[in-house]
Image 1 (cartoon, rainbow, N blue to C red):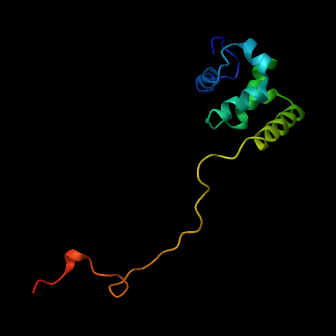
Image 2 (image 1 turned 90 degrees about the vertical axis):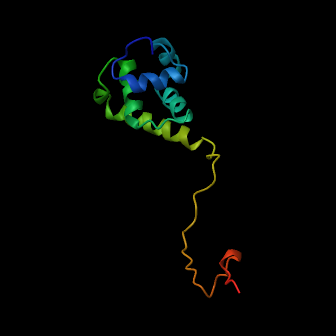
Image 3 (image 1 turned 120 degrees about the vertical axis):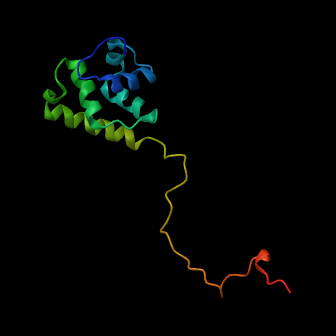
Length: 117
């Protein structure tokens, strides 16, 4: 981010830069929820603190000074946007793990484990 914004540290600034938000004007035009979602869709793992920090940066206040009612609105909007994300493209989580114990009587001998005559 070329503009130094309140609440936005180096890591958050790098994330915003990587998702195409490089100025305060671009952040204003995008809004805090969409900016948060861009970061999330890019594969980063932002916490709600980023969402509050973005709102605080736009309101020019410390992120902890964002009113609770506004924070609740932001969280609700972010959760609704997260619910609309497509499911992950990777394989579903593995099922329960089972352990199989192999013993000499349940395993065929390997070809190289034969007795020489």
